[in-house]
Amino acid sequence: MRKSIFILGLLMLAPFGAAAQNAMPEVSPPDSVPQNGPTQNGPTPLAPLPPVAPPHALVALSAVFAPNDPQPIRSSLDWRVFSARTESDGSHALVAESKQAEPAFSLEDGDYLVHVGCGLAGVTKPISVNGAPLRERMVLNAGGLKISGVMGEAPIPPARLAIQVYLPDHNDPEAKLIMPSLRANEIECVPEGAYHIVSKLMDVTPGAINATNSVIYADLRVQAGKLTSGVLRHRAATMTLKLVNAPGGEALANTSFSILTPGGDVIRELIGAFPSLVLAEGEYVAIARHDSKTYQATFKVQSNQDRDVEVLAQ
Image 1 (cartoon, rainbow, N blue to C red):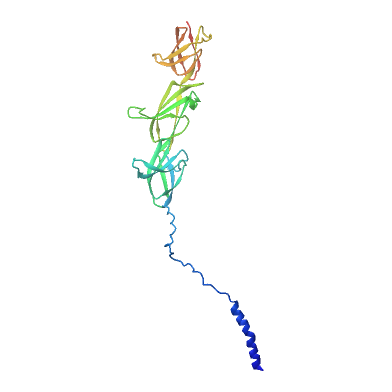
Image 2: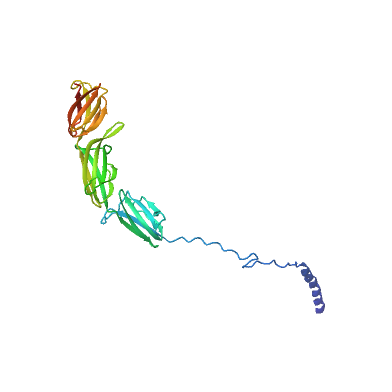
């Protein structure tokens, strides 16, 4: 009985095994897998490396008027940084510039020339940058120069003053003109030293500006780190010219005037019924020409006393 059961079990298992063999799919050989390393076309090129930036360092700059000044200059500075290497034409390449009071530049390692200017004053200093932060304090050895004018007790408007600044020589106070037009009441930065000042009072009328014969001279010395102020006093007045037939009479039109010094030097020539001009304190001769006739009168100018000058047609 046990033998029959065993044979039946074998008969029942046989078809399942055969079906399993028939159901298995055919497997194709795997494709070739690429491997790392050289291909048939040669080695794979490497990507180029990014350029390496040269070393830089931060250079902080400041300037003072005098060596003992505790505070740096806060305005009116012009900074320029040049390469220390000389070009073929003898110049130096400009590397950086700024108008800030205390600029900071990021500079490559190397040698440089730093220049700072303030008005007419300036100084240049060589520096070397070696990868570490650097702080430089520049000494200008300069001071401030301020010129103003008064007539009587009243200040003269800047537009009525023409101020020139000279560097004097041993025997020539006007040896070198360094500032042809210093504006009155404004501070100018200049190197420490002696200066010769020439102030001319200007005659300002609508549509015209003429220099008068009121000229004031002064010699000043500017000290480093200090403001030197000069107040120049002009002594002049405005004269209005008239050719009249009688004192207090009506001015005659179409009259030409010449103003001369007592020595005969011509100061100014004008045309009109009652032209005016500014004259320095002193004595003068007025010559009037009208209808082919010439008349003259002498008059005196006193500071700050404006008045009419009448020439009688007699």
